[in-house]
Length: 73
Image 1: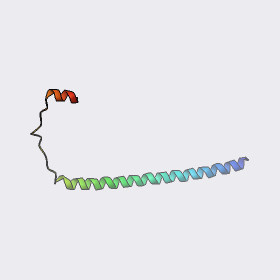
Image 2: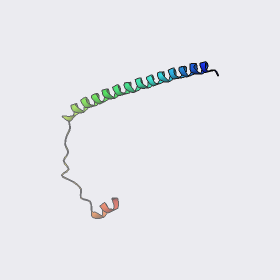
Image 3: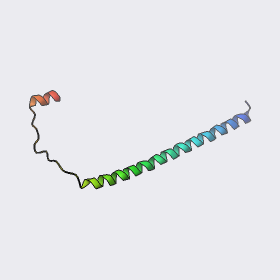
Image 4: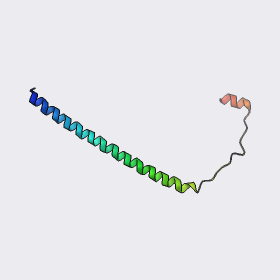
């Protein structure tokens, strides 16, 4: 293969690689935007449910025997 043909082939390959890199870059940027939107939506959802939360006290903790704790440790 002549040098001219090789250069032409290399340029074509480089162009395809640049297009591929650009597509990957656009995909990643889109994913970042989607994730930002999901985070924003989740924060809004979480904030609206904070007021509805009920706190459960752990006053009635069950005491397990020492033998039981040793078996599960």
